[in-house]
Image 1: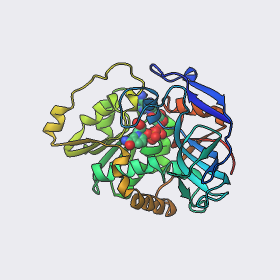
Image 2: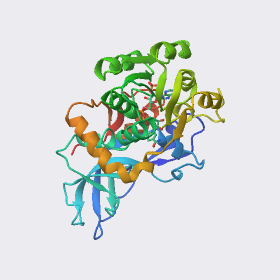
Image 3: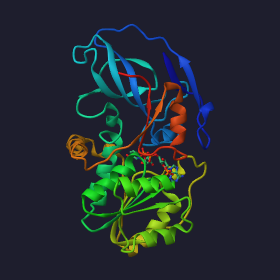
Image 4: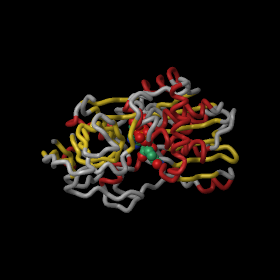
Length: 333
Ligand code: NDP
């Protein structure tokens, strides 16, 4: 039973040396417990924060302990009547092939509703993040211009498509020509900018948003955001969802001061963590599922095969290897 533990805290970009593979015994099941076989493991940018010991909204991982995160798993043995053998669950679980679990905090997945992996993406945490950040902070109105950074990722792809459902003009920013093509051709974005080749981002943004920017959903931060701020309209709303451009920084980020713009434009900027909206997850998940079923939300995943490749898949988030949600398939059901 392989497990991946945090071997050391990264300084800057995370690397193989920060993870260690170990073999761990599977303990015998006690009354009430289930044995879970991991099927799909989610790798997410927020995990970089948990590898550090800086104070944040979730506790840091402990050195010497397994990394944990969103996992879809199958119950392969059970002494818990609520979770029979064959059930499929979603949980915050260790990066482990097999896990013995009390069952508490696991949610059971209906396997016939959607592919199992969707519960780690569009129907799970990233989808909910897109939904609440855009609709509750961005409050997009028909005809408005919505810009999303990190546009071709798990959250960004959903943000842009919901904005289209709401009748907005949508502009995405992403890191390759293939991603730009995908956003425009497959997802119906009105414009997309490759920030790696655009040259002057401020010019590119102004050109892509001739009527200015009403809503900015920020996954990234840095110079991409500076360019958006210079194109903001009066009463613009900015949802600060992620700042991946800084996650590997070892110094405090500095840059353009945005306050004079917020003042001049009567703009609202608000950070959020998806769990702020936990009480409304059920309603949002149902609406997302309906959009998926009606074909209004397209969905893409980048699936890496094999437990041993989990760290590699995680590193890839910081170099933009993924389009849509990055997952690792560990076992068949
Ligand atoms: P993604 O699927 O978007 O993967 C990360 C992407 O970020 C990469 O594919 C890459 O795409 C882009 N990226 C990486 N480094 C940089 C950089 N230096 N500058 C610009 N782009 C970069 O991840 P998620 O959709 O899961 O998450 C997106 C963001 O949302 C993250 O910042 C994450 O932390 C945040 N988040 C916040 C939540 C909340 O509750 N507030 C919940 C979930 C996610 P590219 O090729 O375009 O560079």
